[in-house]
Image 1 (spheres, rainbow, N blue to C red):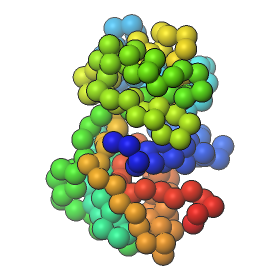
Image 2: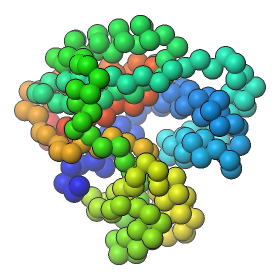
Image 3: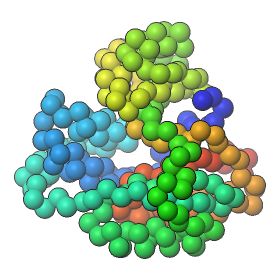
Length: 246
């Protein structure tokens, strides 16, 4: 799994403006609402909610915002009518893209996603057209300056992780979806482990590099999808170059 610039891609997504961060908080608020509706407002007994709270903290969402979202969702269960939708398609250069959304209007969301693909050189496809190229994994990014690879490998494998890969200044810990929460919480409990990011992700079997003239258009498509209120996550199989390489 090494050599795919996954950590760079995560850093690029996290380098958002204040306005974009506000949008991220709104999207995480929707995920909290769904988690509370499905499993209750107590994180101790709701592992999905614990996962979303960890994601919120990794995105620097203030505790007050998190608690407010939980309280709002727990007191307003009947009004939470979001539905999970997944869209698949092709971007510039034959890139593969998966879009996860939470929506209260499927027609609006499908139209917005299709418009984004059409505008920036892509095409929305049918269910399964690209998802066979991906595997769902837990991805926990750990600061490499605080622990050695051998130490982290021992901790992570004992906790149930599948693999640990060093990339730039971070370690990528991969887990199955079923073991993700347990592994993350086990690592969080160790004082030498500093988690930079954690999420359930769609990992492609192979990454591709786009021609230089297609990178800009591809990034425009990603930006447009991220701007859509209903879109929660966008997964793809493209190695994004550093800004100074573009």
